[in-house]
Length: 57
Image 1 (cartoon, rainbow, N blue to C red):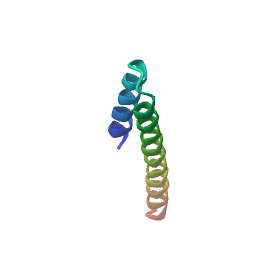
Image 2 (cartoon, one colour):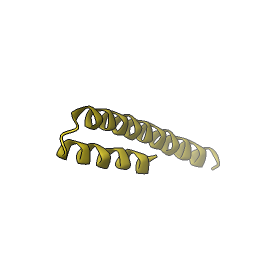
Image 3 (cartoon, rainbow, N blue to C red):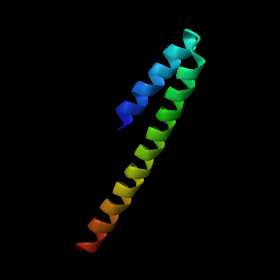
Image 4 (cartoon, helix red, strand yellow):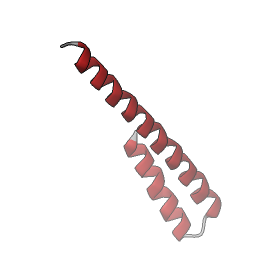
């Protein structure tokens, strides 16, 4: 998922360089959304791993 966010970020940068404002805005919005989804899933898996580890003692 982080790879997709980076891909859309690169697309946004390239589109901004060439002056395609609408495409750059859309790609950066998608990249932001995917990045935050990735962060939320990472935090959830981190918490689940800590809870699972402490419960087995």
